[in-house]
Length: 331
Image (cartoon, rainbow, N blue to C red):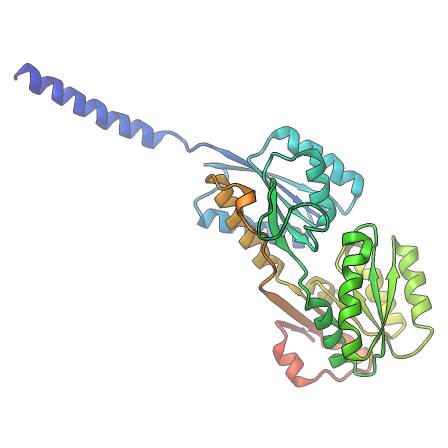
């Protein structure tokens, strides 16, 4: 064999061996932080994070191969949120997925460099998480859980299922609501008059406030409740459902799970869908896109649920068309 042919043969073999070795090398492991508003073992949290992981896997990311997920639950506790934020930032993940305004705020107090993808945030511009929806400008972007027409839709559905409603109390925690509640106030003031309802703001901070607010509101007839989405109303959702049942007052919620527990009707974003969309943003960030280049997106998919058993207890006849439009009907 000629020397030149021998060298070429060895070179080719070496190149082939390099490709084999490279193929056998494990992928670079990326670390993702995930913080949910609920406790880590909450069934709803497990389901939503499961959808997030499934979508990531479809995009080529799987735990144990090229991905490590640091999963934490905030347990609806402000002190826990701060502790989890510090813990995750210390781990220096490549990106952090958050849910809710207070959880996102806690993370952004700890870092302005690690990319953050948020969900369940009503007013990211007002909270100064981003400069604008189209151009976030910093290290955070994500998905909102409220758009302008949503408050009007809550009132519309409440009136459709309970036509006698003329007064509506909006229950929320001003410490957790965007702008101290001013964000919702603007939406309420715009949507209530066309539907001929008189709105009442019912700020609450805990169980005692909720009992007092509902107890005072139902002293007059023809009332209904709109339970706005925040950590306090979610934590005390069973209490609110029980009080609405006790006082015989119709109420609408933002989460399907509350209707499963006995609430009358819900209308809100499809949380599973939002986690799947968030996985797409996380994938793009892991591949090099900056959060500042990804516009904040408004909700695009909503779900409605009705509990016919609760409606019957309240003496309400749910229109057949409304039942047919619902994504889930509990009987």
